[in-house]
Amino acid sequence: MFSYIGMDIVAATAAESRALSDVESMKMAARKINLRVITLYSLAMLTASFVVPMDHPFINGHSTPVGARSIFIIAVVEAGMPKVAHFFSGVFVFSAFTCGVNSMYIVTRVLHTLALRGQTGPEFITRRLRQCRSGVPVRAVLMTGAIMMVAYTGREGSVGARLDELANNCTVSCLVVYASICATYLYFFRTLEDAKIYGNTSESQAASYDRDNPGYPYKSHGQWLKACYGLVACVVLILFNGVGAFIEPFSIRKFIAAYISLPVFI
Image (cartoon, rainbow, N blue to C red; front, side, top):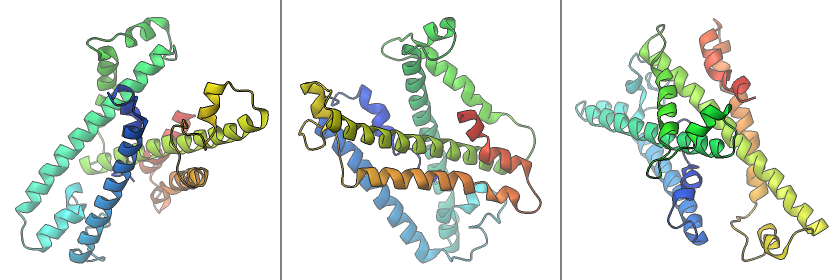
């Protein structure tokens, strides 16, 4: 799930897209991301399953270096090409860096949007977060970068253990976001039904509330059912994500890493 996060990037970047006015281009972008990620993940897992034994000790975390748990690292080492493992390690570092840049972009835009709505606290903070230079919310970028430095703090535990805790925390946070998106859509879907019943919308608005109207922005088959599935699946993953903390002996660090996002979100 941690590796899968980022599927919603097209929605966050749409506001700054030159093709935003072209509804079909946004639909195509969303569908292509889904198809590419699902295809690549499926092929990668299928290929790895042919060369990495299911009972390999490193798969379930029985290795000291975090990188050694990767099925791609295991595959090339088992194939007698340990030097290729360095190439994959480089790919992972580059991927992690681009993921950080991607996340920073999303957070700065969300923070800037909240500031424009006056939802970032005191006015002296909000006023600064609204500022842009050459179309870039520089103050929001700097604040986001400062908060991201928290990832480098912490004096206890190995680097691998702290990385696992950080990844665990990020995964739960994004699952909470995905659950919220699904719940929001279900409320929106109910609004569509209310609009049909009461009919208290203007002619221009009616097109956005009628799924059968050509002007309706986006729809797919069984969309409300997919939202229900996504909501339930995310809640189940959030609740059972920290089961490892309860295995004897109880680990307070793992418990906090797995569940601290819930009270913070609330």
